[in-house]
Image (tube, rainbow, N blue to C red; front, side):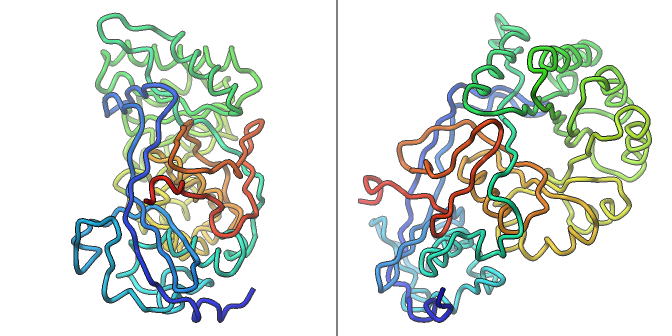
Length: 379
């Protein structure tokens, strides 16, 4: 590795493109949001240097905010970036140097890895493992659809079977049906029944549950009391995080299921408040979104997370690239308990170097993020 190489490479082009991914099925409801659809189209930016190196990645910033001039061409050069060296924007030891360049967080990490001929995780220190547990984050409330003739619990079990065949050995079940879609007591009963049925049918798999803040503390304790023998790996956002309710839940779990973790931080999070709860032992896993918080910001935050003696599992729902980014973070920084996987297919991107086998995601050693964008969508 030649650190000075970043000084020698200057940005010659920035291109804005779209990549589309599709789930293998329609994704249903969670406690708060209706049908999640069949996939997503995400904006990415491709950076090319004067020496022909290319890095790319998710970049949601609006064109008018990101670029000083616009054109009808997909290649839109920002005058204050063209000609700059990569070293002016990015430091391998910390990530993106200035906040104004944060919309290029993922593309710059990828580009630096390509230039330095090393995977991103190596740039981060290789403090984790390149074989990371990965759970299935696509088990939603399919028992409730179609609304005119619901398929029932068998629909959830079918989805688990299909994703088991894809290599998953852990399922995160959406619960909280009584918050919006069913009468409270009926929803509670269904949540319990779904959990127990999945445990019965998949005895070799981990079960995680995610209420999307759809329960009260009392209601969630009632739910968990009925499934405590199901070896729940973690409970995610059971209710809006607050010290009093989390203390009650922790005391309850200590008696009924002491190995179950509490994961929080996806929705409307406040970093300082979450770290305070973590330091008090009330949250075990922080799950802020890998893109919402940002790759560079996760790097900056990790020492404080380790100091609080908690682990991470960045939220990745919405785009499969986010899972791959999170796996590089895990392999680079460690302290990651598991990853959120998203069963998805795309013809726009080749992520085949990443392999999911028996519930473990294998992180490749290719330079950068090790993901290639198809030439067909770049022209």
